[in-house]
Image (cartoon, rainbow, N blue to C red; front, top):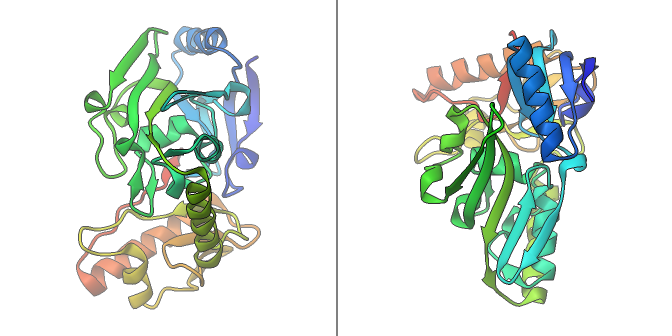
Length: 287
């Protein structure tokens, strides 16, 4: 189950990054616990990887264990007004299941290319909906393999943040409590959001979604555009011409080029507007 020196580029939506020293894609809770025991024996750093849609991995890779919770650890079921999903379930799959069941609360999150585990971890959101509005509970495993169950309040959700971000735990199950609605109206709304995404976001090029968090009272994309940075490039990494808060890979970008570009964007926006942008995308490894 444990592999050595696995390239992570194909596991991220940016299509960049070096290898994981150790890599595991568990299919069950028992296999997760086995991987955690392997990590403990060797005292390895651990990174939990879902869809890789909010992530840049260093060109040097990650010198530890990457635990990939993807399609091998994906399941969902509807129980009355609840949607119960394993951590590797795609968020978009959950949206479709909810809409088909006539359950409202996440239809605006259609098209987000992440997992429920990652979405709960960062409190993913879009178009005036956030997962924190519908999460009933989150189940995780700590690094010793013990189960931890938290209700919504115990997750301490805020904008693109949860208590999980500071804890050595792995999200393995997310339960959403939704509201009954009309399936056709929900499907129309979901499709409208998907169309807006296609029109406004550079989905045709590898990217990691919104690069920077929204500053209070401002929009990162608008600030970047006002600074004249639309189309700015460092190698094959560039600020999208379509949406300035997206950094895209024009073909052969490196992780370091993406980092260097974001550093220059942060410096220019701060110099022009007195606002320091904060990255929303997670960077791991050495830069």
